[in-house]
Length: 375
Image (cartoon, rainbow, N blue to C red; front, side, top):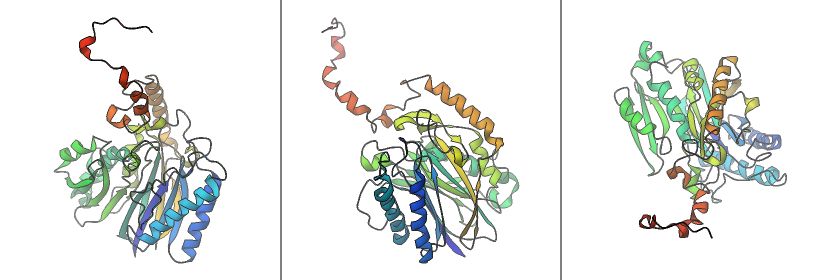
């Protein structure tokens, strides 16, 4: 069976600041998607949250970028905003609905999208990841390790299907262009791009020996759409597992290292990406640290069997403890770099408004010998 998996997310208002989704938002979204399933538009769905982001996981047979599916997601976000977020005065109601002009696709309008169409295998396990308080570049390091690092993924060495390597489609989020690069022979070129996480992000990964899609990720940059800071991008992605793809354990292994990502408080700081069970998917300390949830599903004729809460496991307790230690260390820097983002990233925050008020007070360095005025 050929099936399309779509994860579409948006921050449309949250409880007690940029904290977490309200249960009534999830309830309404579930009702709306159940109607769509009953009418035959969806095969199946699952509604969840990553911090303050409402996540719509949907399976269907319409293919990617389908107007009906994207319209369903858009209208769901709009109705939840109008019928729940605004009446309850939830914070930042409708935040990610940046352009109120739906024209068949939510890409470029604010919501994040990860989707792919593929032939469902005899057994189709999929790991889905959703993050809060960070950006699409947060996936760069784990995706490289999953699909190109033999020290992480043993299958790259001992599985003939994986040994042929993978193709990375990398998006330049500033220029709006992409490049396809092959691992392992172009690994250094891949790393040259992916290390610049604020500009380049992995859009998709394909298995080279037969062209099968292996992973899909969202690459929306909200500040590039709005032209100013409106919250971090909070990306989503999914990775197909087992039987010619990396094993589930190989997919999860990179997240045992709480690597530093951009986002956190006001989208302006650097912090560790902390994998947590769904019950801890709420951002508190300094609006963070950046959170990651993982859900495991089996697809069965398009039906979503599960989920398994992938990080609800003491095997990740040490990772969480390390993330807390890193968070504490980074917070001790206060407003100083590298805890605060660099100037290129900060230009999309509210900092330029502060700097503008000082513009007329700057003088030429030729006048440095003058005594300061204390008036």
